[in-house]
Structures are given as C-alpha cells and as structure tokens.
Image 1 (cartoon, helix red, strand yellow):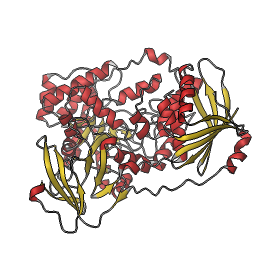
Image 2 (cartoon, helix red, strand yellow):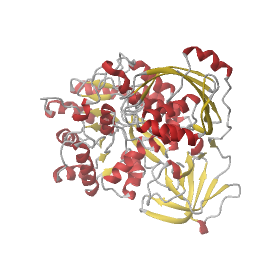
Image 3 (cartoon, helix red, strand yellow):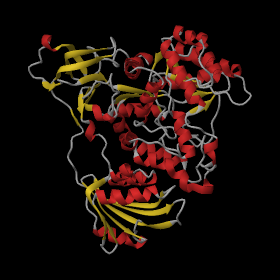
Image 4 (cartoon, one colour):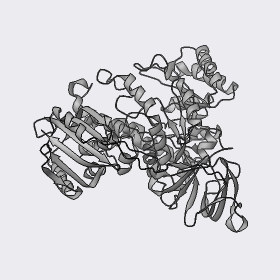
Length: 582
C-alpha cells in the first residue's frame, strides 16, 4: 500500500528542504486602553441566569464595570468589542492536574514500569521542554486556571514562571504529596511523593513547604492489602492540623469510603477524587456538607489507564486536535513493545472492562454529592497515563453531564465553585467588578451546550485579548505525528487532517501514486477497513526545517511486517508532498 524511501534517501531530503513559513498570526493583543465589551449576554454563575444586553469594562487586568448596556457609557478611549449575540462567561478551572506528568505511556513508572524502553528521565525532560505548548492548549480549551495538586518542589518554580507568562493559565500549586505509601521508580532527587512514617515527619514535611508559600497541602492517603486505614490516621490528622495551623487548606487523595470518611473527620478540606468502592450514604453526605468539603470527581482518569492497558481507544476529533500529538501517540506504543511490555494488552481486555464498575459508582456518588449540596469542582487529574493535558477537560465535563449534572451545575463547578473551593473567589470565578479579567467570549449559550474550543471567539486573560485559533502552533513534526496517530487508529479523518487538499504522494522516481485528499481518502479508507491491528512504529525520525524524515516499521494482523522511509514536506501548516520507497 505505502511506498517507501530507503534509508539512503536522507540525502535526497536535503534537496527539498525549505524553511517553515511564518504565518504571522497573532496569538494575543495587549490593549493599551480599556476594553469595553458591549451588548453581551453574561453567564451569571452567581444567580444561574443569563443577563442579557450587558456591558463589561476591563481596565488593566481587572473588571472595572459590569451592568446593563443602556446604563453604561464606554470610556472615551476604550477599545469597544460588540458582543451582540455572544455570551461572556468566566474562564474555567481544571482543579486537578500534575505538571510533572506528561499524559503519555511512560510517565508513571510506579504503575507501569517501561524504563528499560524509555527512561523516566526522558519523559520528565519532555514535560519541561514542552510546557509552553501544554499551557497554550489549556488556554485554547478555555481553561484560564490550573491547580497542580501535588508534585516535586520544582512545582513552585513553575508557578513563578507561569505567573509572568501571558500564554499560560493561572497556576496554584502544592509540593510533594505527604504520603502513607512510597511508590517506586519516581524521581528520588526531587520526589513528587514522600512517605512519612510518623506524625512528626508529617508535620515536618508541611513546615518544609512553608517557605515556598504553597496554595494548599496535599495528602496521599493510601491503604494497601490487609492494612487498616486507622493505622495511618494519626499521620493524616497531624498533617492536617499542621497545615491548618499555618492557614493552609488540605486536599486528600482518598478513593475508598473508609479513608475518605476518616480524612473528612480529621479535618480535610478537599477530596481530590471520587469515592469509588461504594455509594456514599446519608451519614457521609451530611458529614461532607457540614464540613464544607470540596469534592473533585475526576471521573475519567481511571478509564484512561484502562483504555491504554487494553488498547481500546475512543479518541474524538477534540482529543486528537487539542492533545499534544506525541504524548497521545505514545499511548499506542504498547502495540509494538511485545515482550518488553510487562503484559499483553490483548489479555488485559478480560481484566479491565469499559466502563468499569468503579466508573458507575463514581458517577452515582457525584450525583448524590451534588444533590446533598456538597461543593463540586471539576478536575481531570491530567498528566496521568491516558489523561491528556487540556484536551481531557472537555471529556470530564461530558462525563459529569452523563452522571446527571445540569449544564449550570457543571459550569459552576468549573468557575465559581473552583474559586471558592481553593479560596480564590475574591479574584476569580465570576464576572464581577474588581475581579481579574479572565473571561471567555462565546458564540453560543454554554448553558444549552457546554463550552467547547470551537465556540470560543476570544479569551481574556488578565485583560490580554487572546486569539484561540492561533494558540496551538503545530510544528512540522507535530503535523506528521498527527497523521501517524490517525493511521494507527485507522481514523481516516484524523489521518487526513494534517494534509493539504492538493497533497501529492510520490515514489522515489517521482511517479505520482496518489493526488489530492479525495483520492487518498478513498484508497486509505479501504486499506484501513481491511487491515486489522494496523500499526506504524517510528523507528527513527529526522526533522530539518519543514521536512520530516521517518524510518517506519509497519505491522498488522494479516500482513508480514515491512519497513521503509517516508519524507514529508510541509508548507503553510499542511503536508503538501510525501515521498515513499520500500
């Protein structure tokens, strides 16, 4: 089906090398004058009503005026934006992410150890090198605030960096998780999780973080095997007491009913995951309500692991567009690791079922907590294997909707509830005078259809006007990886998206094999349909300006493996030619 270039064709690739054109598209504007948004419909998350024909004035980085358009006169020097027919809502918050995790296959060696294939240090370096791209993706998805609920001490430096970066969301963070269990294979020099063995060690780890000014403290309340949760309860209680004594809220990872209940009784402020082993009874719900517990359900993160371990993916166009293509693509590596993987993904399909029983329990508990008046806050646990930064947020909101929450309840969980839950409501979460100008201007009513990147016309972040369509700047290598991902998923639309409408595919002699998207669509659609378990492994890759050279190995269930080289040439953000030789 595919024709390839021999490895020696690398010399040829130099002859078609051309620098990538700069489109010159602006990613943001920083107005020197006030900004006045007129005749707009405000999504009022306080009253849960749409306030029609409103005007919002932004001066510097804050909202200076909000009210009916007929009562407000735009400042004489203002930049006026006509919001007629548009909807203005607060920027959203993903209240559970991890900067130190990539979302790829190799990011949690404590749970899936593939360090002999791909060193953990390489994954960690990738996260550092690609943080700007990941943060831009958050903004593109309408997420203007992220909350990292536990990681290395380097989290605090990341917060400082993002605080001075325009194209990055607000970041609230904590440091190492105070844990009752020490996971293996993670960074030992700057560990994201630290096991404490006594009440004093728990207090000391809280104190160690104080000079960094954490936004809160996080506890990992893990009970394994035949352990009893009461055994480590004093440690949890000591960490909470020390945190509260220093004016800090405490978030607790406690997914079992018993650990969650003990955590709440010990004084926890935030449960960062759902209880997934049994339904919440009335006693627990009333305890959570009376203690003003914040409940972050993270409904999709476990499913991300299950889909990866079984290689049963259901990526949407949204996932494929807003996920970083390299980390999403790495999830499919299990299909070529063979004996290097600790398990056969085929056999895992009898162990992990989608949806799992735990998924149903979590959905039930979310609805029960909402009905009981518990403060619900949206969060994804992004960075874990199979839960992509930024892109996963839309899936989390849809899962909350499927669990029975209304659109208003979901929007509040993503805005004002998140701000209240982490003590940031003076600055964030609603459209009110004096608050930071973190706003989304939408083409459609989010209370009727949940906000998506496609519905976002403009993003206002600290008063800066951001153009979402220009936020994600795909490099030539990203475009090539996107089409590899589509190929491996046998998704014809995803495969073709990075290609120009006039793309031409050649062999090494310059003979045209296929021309134009339509012909490629017809040929490859037939190929995908008749080739089960099709998989392309990138053995080596070279990037030279706007030319990408891949050494590929192809496998499938009904064909012998084959190898070759493909040379992709990119112009104006699209693949315009491909040369193949076997």
